[in-house]
Structures are given as structure tokens and as C-alpha cells.
Amino acid sequence: MPEPADHEPYAGERLVTASADDVERAAEAALRPKKLEEFVGQRTVRDQLSLVLQAALAREASPDHVLLSGPPGLGKTTLAMIIAAELGTSLRVTSGPAIQHAGDLAAVLSSLEEGEVLFIDEIHRLARPAEELLYVAMEDFRVDVVVGKGAGASAIPLALPPFTVVGATTRSGLLPAPLRDRFGFTGHLDFYDPEELERVIVRSAGLLGVQIHHAAAHEIAGRSRGTPRIANRLLRRVRDWAQVRGDGVLDLRAARAALEVYEVDPIGLDRLDRAVLDALCRRFGGGPVGLSTLAMTVGEEPDTVETVAEPYLVREGLVARTPRGRVATPAAWEHLGLEPPQGAWAAGLPSSGTLFDAAGGTG
Ligand SMILES: Nc1ncnc2c1ncn2[C@@H]1O[C@H](COP(=O)(O)OP(=O)(O)OP(=O)(O)O)[C@@H](O)[C@H]1O
Image (cartoon, rainbow, N blue to C red; front, side, top):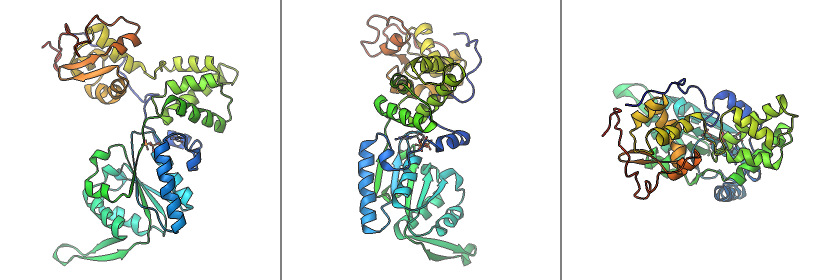
């Protein structure tokens, strides 16, 4: 059985995580595009949404409800704000987890003013009774207020003014069909390509009031995992480096040096990601290896390896998940500067790989 890793367990927030806490969201506020035309990339969603909004404005009516799906940090909240701004109305913000009871949602809905946009983040996490209340409100602009208890309870219908729900979800597959069907428009946000991220970075640098070289923006974009939130975060760290150790200008040297300090490598992998690749290739000859064994080797919980490191490694084609365990692809070997074992990957699995099972033994 392999020895557990001797380094400190991987802890705390990662620089390359796509999620954000409240402090970071506050820092992000200044960088949010305010109009659809300032929103970089996502051309299809932008074009479709623009039509929906323009048609609603021409009709002087509220647009259909909008569902935005896609991984964190790609701009769902930003688009919700833009929708309200483009319609010239205000945005009310809530989220699935914040609504514990149907009554909480009824209170929000009954306080809406005509034409307002209600943004429900993580809508897939709404409790079932709240979901049912929302169907009716979205379709008939009505909430049924329940008065009394038990057999004597009765529902008093309360008419609502027209409004638009913008729902955001990272897991659209978890939304029940009746709720999904209430949205007249669904936009799926995809990871950004490096050229789009470069534009996000140059725009954000301008808003932060710092000078950036094209080569530095290109370098940061390549390490941002297709995610504007990560791009903006790395940009802020490079700015810090340039201000403290450089001359304040964000050039290629500053970008590379800062990202080395923060252990973000040229394709956006951090220490945990590289530890996983390293273990797979150097310790297990490329795999296949069971998740528990792999996690133990890098000194992490299996859940951390599976949910924090693996998705991006799989997305980048560095790791494959097979029924026999995790396998390093030739790209993983190359990324570590190692020679992939001859013919190992040809059959889809390393031919001579020993399978280490979930308990850490061999199988
Ligand atoms: N297309 C874009 N152009 C410019 N900046 C963007 C774009 N998309 C996102 N950003 C920036 O990235 C940051 C994160 O965006 P946002 O909060 O909208 O993501 P999100 O998808 O709502 O994330 P979450 O699911 O975690 O709530 C913000 O600072 C925002 O300004």
C-alpha cells in the first residue's frame, strides 16, 4: 500500500476555484459588465437574449421567464443584472437555499412591483413546496395564501403584477420538468475560450486602473480555466505582484512571477491538481488506480479529489475515469515532462497497470 503523502493536507480556498465567497463577490461588483454589449463572449446566448429583451421592450411587456444554466463563475448573476438594467427595472435577488419555506417565497413574490426581475440563484435547491408555489406564480401571476390550519385552512388567491423570473442553476438536470417548462427562454453558458478571457482581463484591468500588456493578459487567460471569475481573480493577484515587486505595470514577467508565487501553472493547474497527476504517473505508472488510494497518496479526502481536482483534469483530457479506476492520459505525462509508457494508452487503458482498489489494496 502506498505511504500517505508527507505534505500538509490541501486546505482552504483555491485561487483557481470557480466559486466565490461574499468578500470576493463584493470585489467583483466593480468589474461586472452593466450592459449586454459589454458582456464578453457567449455570443449565442447574448444574441438570443437580446432578441427576447428587445421584443419585450417593443411590446412594453415583461419578457418570458429566463433560465440561465452553466458552471459557476461564467456570468449568470451578471446576466441577471444586465437583464434588469436593459429593461430599465430593478432586480430582486434571492436564492434556493435562502428560501426555507413556501411562505418565504410567497412574501418575496407578493412584494414584487410590476415589471421587476426576480433573480433566484441556485434555483435547483428550492424546497418542493416553494417550487410548487413558484410554478403557479410564474404561469398565472398568482400566489395562494393559506389562511388557518388543518381542516379549516383555506387558500386565498392573491393576484401578482407581471414580473420576470431569472433562474440560475449549475445543475439544470436537477430541475423538475414542470419548473423547467415555465421558462420561455433557457440560455446555457459555456466555458470561455482564451481569446474571450483575454478581453475580459483587459477590460477588468482598465476598470482597476492598471496598465496591462497584451502578453500578460494572454498568459493570465491561459491559466484561468475558461472562467471569467478565475481570470479576474488571477488578474488581481498579478496586480498585487506588480505593485509590490514590480513597477506597477502588468507585463509578462509580472504575470509569470505572480502566478508562480501562487502555484498556478501554465494551464491553470494548482498544487492539488499536480499532486494528483504526479501520483497517477509517478507512483502508479499511469493507473488505473482507485479513488481512495489516489486520495490517500496525495493526503486528501476522496471527496476532495473527486469534486475539487478531478472535474478540471477530466475536462482537460489529463485524466480519464474508467470502470477500473483513474487513468493518466498521454497529455498528463507530457504535462509533467515525462515520457508516456509505450503503447500503454493505445488500448484505452494502461496494459500493465495494476488496479489499486478503493480500500488501497491491489485488485
Ligand atoms: N462575459 C463576461 N464578461 C465580462 N466579465 C464577466 C463575464 N462573465 C462573468 N464576468 C465576471 O466574472 C465574475 C463572476 O461572474 P458572475 O458572478 O456573474 O458568475 P455566476 O455564473 O453568477 O457565478 P455563480 O454561479 O458562482 O453565482 C464577475 O466579476 C463578472 O463581472
